[in-house]
Image (tube, rainbow, N blue to C red):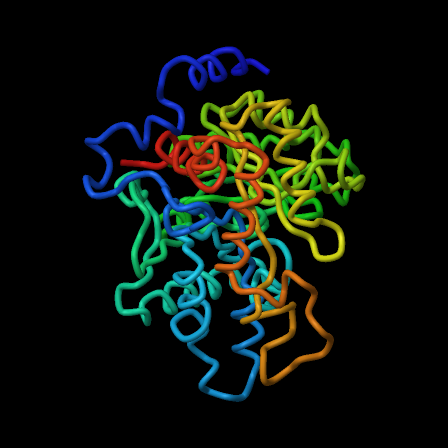
Length: 382
């Protein structure tokens, strides 16, 4: 990977890694100090790498109008209580659920962007979106959550099968989503689109198409985070070769722990890290305990270093225990241990596990969100 030496040296030796965000007093709140209370999420800047729109879909599907402001009335209070500061939220994408149930790629994604922006407007200033470097939090937020909008797949920006567009016009839809506030895009979901192969096409699916290369280059230019969570291994390697900015696998586990094509091999982990990027591990009901997620973090810290680790998802909480279940309306099966807990329980418990594993506070700061902040400082526009 052409960027490996320069980027890894930069992170290791320049002092501009995540610790710099918190040591540079010109860029931080003068009243904030690093966490002092063991296990308290509110002492950290927490970035959740991927929260699907399941709860929005489930509550909007109910006839009860009291459920139709899901962010303001249900999700946001739990996020604030849990100490989450930034949530990376899919704003449409290739799968029908991430388009809010629409089978139309572009229209469905635009409807979801509108839904999220409309829901944020209802919060009376308690939620906002991250668009520029100046929107990145420099200390834990109080009674406020920022959202980072992320298309989950590039199907919504596709061009005609045999386009005659000028090169600049081929990327019009990508730029339109950028103007609406979208600041990231997973290149694919599970399947194939015009950009590349998702892992459902085979673990070692094809490299990027010519259009996919153009999209990566334009995302670099605009200031958008390139997502590779669902991309084939060869697609990940190709992105790592051509990107000029860090890339992110916001919600994927490690193949040595969960042996499915969807999870990353060591070679993929190294390729992502070579760009200066991040891998966010995620809870999967029935497959991953929190102790196992900590094992994955230990494995990655040995392989690629703590500068490249984030948290994608710690599971459903008691306020929305499973997909399709809204408490008091649609309970279908008893929740598991994690699903019975609050978000505050999740993050408190996970921080305590990292502390018991012997991680220094500086590394915990990076893992819980600092690494995302660091790459956004490099990627986003001014």
